Amino acid sequence: MFLGVLVVGVVTTGIIVDPAAVEDHSTSVPGQVKAILNAHMVAPPHRITAKTSPGPLPKTPQKTPTSVVPKSRKVSPAATVDEAIYQGKLALRDRAYVTAVERFYQALKMAPKRQKIHYLYARALMRTKRVKEAIAVLKNALKSWPKYIGAAHLLARAYEAAGEPEAAKDAFEYYLKLEGIEDHHKDDLVTEGLRLLKAGDAHAAAGWFRRAAAGAPKDMRARYLWGKALFLAGDHSESAKIAESVLTASPDDLNAIYLAGRGYLAQGAKEQAKNHFERYLKLAPRGRKAKRVRKILKTLE
Image 1 (tube, one colour):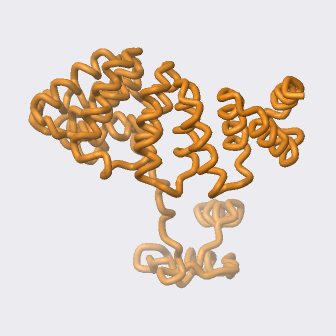
Image 2: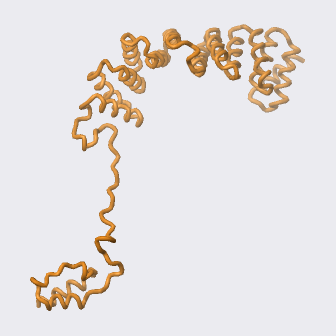
Image 3: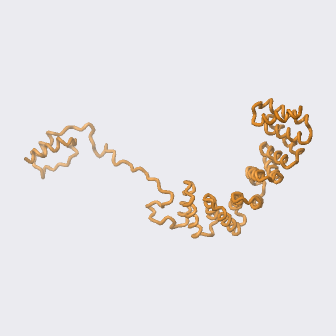
C-alpha cells in the first residue's frame, strides 16, 4: 500500500528529477522503493546541476521616494544637514516644491552659517509663490555674505517676480558690480534690458542692450535691441544708425530693415524710409510685418 501511493504521487505530479542529483537515502529507505522510483524516472531535457543552475533572479531595484531616506540608512528624513539638503534637491528636481521648502528650512535651522542653504531655501520659496519670504532670506544672506553673487542675482529675479521694478533694477546693478560687467554673460544684460523694455523704461533698457552689444560685437540681436530701445526712447537718428550697422553685418535682417525704415521715417527722410520698406517686401512679401509695411508705403506715394 505504501509503495503504491508513493509511485502514484511521483508520476501524477509530473515532477522530473535527475536521479544523480537525488541524495541517496538507501540506508533509511528500503531498496525496493529506490528501485521503483528509478523505474519510473524520465530523463530531464536539461540536467539541472549546481553548474548550470541560473541561481536566484536579480531583484528589481526599487526607486527611493524623494522625501524619504533609504531604509538602509535607518535615520529620520532630516537627521543630518547633508541629508536634508540632498532630499531638498531631489524634491526640487521632482517639482515637489513644498517638500523642498521643508527640507531646506530644516537644513537652515541646523546649519545657518552654510551659505548655499540660504540660496536653495529662497529658490524653493519662490517656486511655491512665497516671493516676499524669499526676498527676506536673500537680503539676510547678503548681509552675511555681501559678495554672494548667486544670492544677488536671485534677489533681482525675486523683486521682478514681486512686481517691484525699481528694487529689481537696483539689485541687478548690484549683481553686475560684484565682479564687473565684463565678467558677466551678455544674456544677463539682454535679460535685464528686456525686463526694462517690458516695464516701459526704453531709455534704461537701451543702456543694458548697449552694454551687451559692446561685450559681444558679433551678436546682432543685442545690437538690434539696442537700436529698437533707442527708437522707443525717441532717439530716432541713433536708432537708424545702429540698424544700419546691423545690416552691414547681416544685409537680410528683416527686423533691422524695418527698424531703419521707421527711424528714417520718424526723421522725415521719406526716400530712405521708402527704400528700406520696399527692400523688406522684396525679401519677405508675406513677412510678419508685410501688411504694416504696405500701409506705410501707401502713405509715402
